[in-house]
Image (cartoon, rainbow, N blue to C red):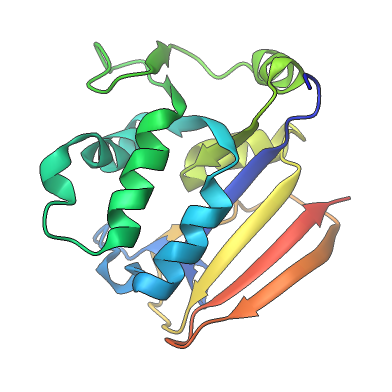
Length: 188
């Protein structure tokens, strides 16, 4: 039913709150099969992904079949989930989309995202900390999913922005065999 969509921000972050280190490396955050299966189940309800250009370029590999060739089933499952969703990419420099079901927007418009939420019958997801910061500042995010990795990297790209204060309600938590922890919050 239209009007019921949530905007969800999900991130895999180090214990000290970074999605990538100072060199942009995030290999330390790669999920194992158990975590990947869990993420897949979180992503299944998503009908539209919102990305900035850099996050879109990272995620676009899921559109290529060779990305998952010979990989475990959870990666094949995620690729299918990702391909089935619409993508909105906010970029002033990207000439055209390289993946199906993708449109480019030249600027982030909070009112347009609010309208998309109101008209969608499936949830939306914001990917990447920079665009997430904009949606958090605009009060558009309904839920936050943080997957914390048992590593401290000491600096890099923050998962959550400075200068934003939110009251959150813990909805669920889950511990994985590899030491990852999932925290699911609802924005009050």
